[in-house]
Length: 201
Image 1 (cartoon, rainbow, N blue to C red):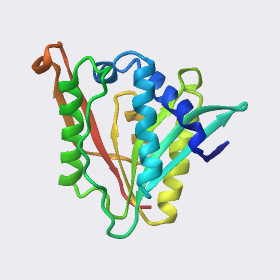
Image 2: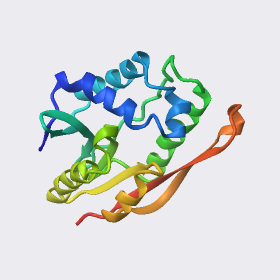
Image 3: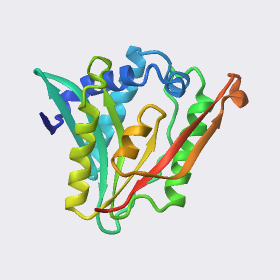
């Protein structure tokens, strides 16, 4: 069952977000392992969106009475564009430079591509590890895209490697990428996050 999330769900959503991305290397380097500090940072971001951004639309998936995942959208209609906010790394971030590089590029790409006008922007799609690969993520994505289609909106997201096949299946196409070279910040490797767009249906 997919229903609107309540403010009281925030701690649960934050824990799900931390757990869902804990195995993702970029997430590990930006936020560290799951911790109370990381959960508090995620919860504060969710609460800020709920209380200060009227474009916010957060839907939760409930399975057997518990929240299994959620989708955090920003739905922009007409000419309303998102505010570009500077993000500060959480205290628990092992590599704050990687955090700043990733989110700085994300903000720049969104400005470059005119993100936020007549568009639904998927900020977070997270499913708890025990409920992954059971269709929960697909159901949340489908619900959000149905909402976008009802309002004649395009959709935008930045895809992790794990989520990329799902987004392609739902009609998203590659339009750009965010590339972070970890070696610049004292860690080996790199990351490529794909910026994706789905035309209005």
